[in-house]
Image 1 (cartoon, rainbow, N blue to C red):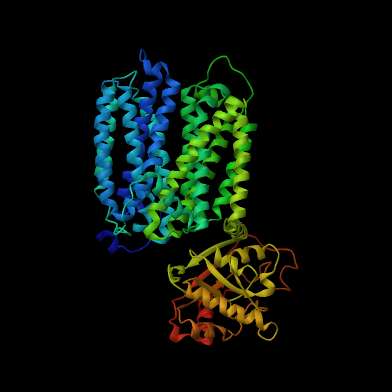
Image 2 (cartoon, rainbow, N blue to C red):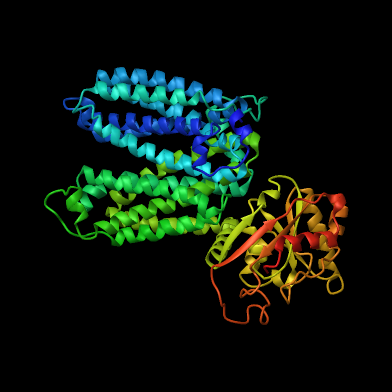
Length: 635
């Protein structure tokens, strides 16, 4: 980290990251890169489509698709090598060299634009794709190197927001600097200037030590691509997250590819209306990305992924029904379109698809970054880029099949995409039930309670530990699980473990059921063995030492099981207190829990953690006193 960040070790919010050297230079480097990619591509597409008198322009449909394919091709050819280099070498140095290469490519591009040489420009587009392929694995693998665990979601949100804003601005700038209507010198100067800005910003990125400096690079694209995808498959949940991200790009490319024709042939809008729709869609993704930090409580929250996919499908289906169904003789500008019946519904649908898309994508990137071993991180992200490119190609083919061969209308194609998204989501969440489990936790805890966190940083980001907490309601484990950054293995009374619906959550979260030694000695001994194994694997375990829910709201005696656990596995113990749960539908206040109508919703509750207790100082009585002091008088 920089001297500035060492002097200011506190965690900052996502907007605060824009003032920190450990993030801001990287953000602007990737922003200028994404902007330049799309400025160059859009300028080239305009030259291809409207370059009068040019033989290549006369075959614009073929040339446009050739250009798009040449930009994607390097991601298949070079991503595996790029991932190896990002793991082997210092990342800020690699970024600076990639940006120098961009300056050189854009310098040649400036000459090609000046002479309107489409062949040279198309070749340079391939080189642009190549430098983007080498930048991709660094782009996401460097974020965890410089950000704290509870800043990773916010950092990814800013990167996603910045990328889509840069794409949009690049497309708009390409239209404004139209190389057919204006002198090509304008766009030539612009791409060179932006490339220099990107290099200048990269010079301030702090160093990131290479995680695998002894790695021997294999330059064979075929064999190494297979190996790279193999690294991603090592952790099944990570690989399914990569598939989910690639599916997002499948949907995104499908919507963006059809948007121009949808605007012209369905909505009867001009190019200005297309720009409006593209702006709304991109703004939605940016806004949704920025929402993630707030919705997730600054932790990697997989529960947002099903929420995002559900929203994408619902508003995708509504976009089909939002089809105006009215034919106009002339194309409408923005003002006429806004006053057209149904136009606001279309804009809202595109905005919401974008918002839920941002909510969907950010936790997945953060999950891959935090769940992948550091020395393989860049190669796993390279595998993500390879599969993203593959899914984008499949998306183009799907458009050809559904619109060309099956003769669907574009609104019907949007409906098919929404239904396909439901099917894909159902498959992923069935194969990796952790997504559905976290979604249920998120929904329950965010609809019934307003949770305030105090000192949860006391729970270590790595290594084993035991959390001890007072036991007030059947929701205690879910509240804690939804508030802590790390997955927690809960030890819970077996009858609670078997409550319908909650059983799915507890079982998926690998909770450990326990019974009294007298009633079920086998379950009792198995629970302690499972606790020991979890701690040996550096996991967090949470126990409720009272052994049962409180009947009067007070903290009962802590049983000596915690001492037995620490005697076998001497790890730190973190006392945690729940305040505000007494009196809820799930507590025993005024009678047995779950047997009366709920009397309150969205209640204010507090989770407060105390300082870790070293193993040699652990005793049941002392821990009870600490938890009681943390809770105070408010039950």
